[in-house]
Each structure stands twice: as C-alpha cells, then as structure tokens.
Length: 127
Image 1 (spheres, rainbow, N blue to C red):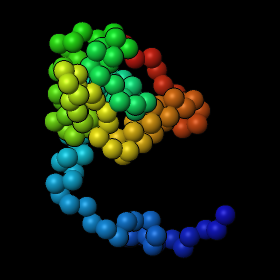
Image 2 (image 1 turned 60 degrees about the vertical axis):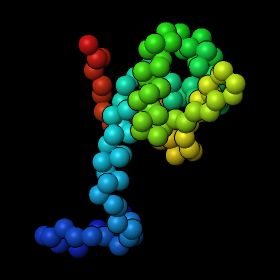
Image 3 (image 1 turned 180 degrees about the vertical axis):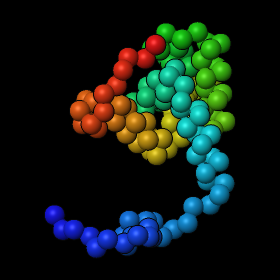
Image 4 (image 1 turned 30 degrees about the vertical axis):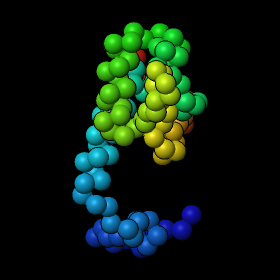
C-alpha cells in the first residue's frame, strides 16, 4: 500500500466527489423520503410493492394490516412520491413510483442484513 505524503490540510480529492452540485431542495426532499421510509411498517409496505403492483385489498391481506392503517401509510408514501396509484374501476392499485425507491430500500435491507463482522461492529440487542 502506498503511503500518502503527510499534508496537514484536508481538501477535495480528485475523483472522489461528484462534480454535479446538489440543489438545496433536493436535501429537503431526500430527508422527507428517509423520514417516510424510516417507519418499519411503511418500509415493509415499500418492500412488498417492490415485488409488483397490488390492489389495496391484496396489500391489506398480504401485510395483515387493517384498511384504515394501510390508508394512512399509503397516504404518507404518496405524499413523498414513493408510491403511485392508479384506479381501475372500483379498485385502486399501488406500485413504487420508480426504480430509485426499489434500489434504495433493497440497498438498505441488504446492508442491515449483513453480519456485524462485515462492518467491524458489535450490535447490542435493541430494547
């Protein structure tokens, strides 16, 4: 491994930063997205919808969630543009808004499912 010359200052490193600036409103929207997916039940719902489009009754049956609770969860996810809906007759179908959401959730679940030794940490049990 090559040693770097000691430099007392920190600065941008070539090739390690994106050259495209992030719009300030993107930070607000991203933090709202993380708040929305930060709830375990909504996260489970997103993962379920990542498998494909489902109507509300299918979601309720598969997840074991009461319709009133499910309605509130879907409302939050719609407001943050995480899921989209379409109506077909008297049925409403939900799916993920785009592939970014599926990738984000899959990456988070993959990361969380890795053994502790991969990250060099030891987790205690949560209360």
